[in-house]
Image (tube, rainbow, N blue to C red):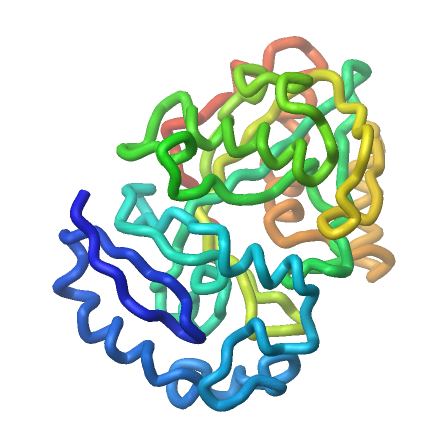
Length: 291
């Protein structure tokens, strides 16, 4: 796949496949105008500390390791059919300036890992996180990278690359060694497309084609990465509705993707898993667009 590279907002990397280069060429030039038109009124809070042509790296408001990952991780840009159209830095993909202009749809995954006794492993995202800090969410949420091992192009019915990425992130965030939860034990259930802004810092947000992976196995977490996860919780099936009500009352914060999935799909997946018939709920060919 022939690609061309453009400089994005705040120096973000963007690589577009030849099929979309022509329509994006003017856009790529526009992005060089850092902060003046694309960021507009959003250039405040953490980004307000930046120089006029600065980099996110210069901000004192964000954790250094999380900033490094924004630059280092290369996400997979897709269209709403989940077809690969290029790649871009994690930073580019999560700036609302790009999301609002539909330039940053990218591939992601959400893992729902259950213990042998049927409890769901939840994590609380570290306060160091730039994206949705302090939220309770499913076991692991992240992105397959634009690498040979994790790039499924065209989309793979088995989600081979996505599941490899999930195993990698289980280790990175929760300390679960690769092999403790084999990739083949993570069932590819379906995909959702959703968009959400980080409420307390609307510079950032999400716009993802999210692969939902559900599995059961050894969920022991020998060493949490405190830069990613502050704590974990084992949730029983009968406690799910109570957790959602806690969020309504403002007692906890939930990630937007977890809340959407928990309200619509998680109860039936959980019941099928407890009954030993998870495959009956697989809908891997579908892509559900959510408001």
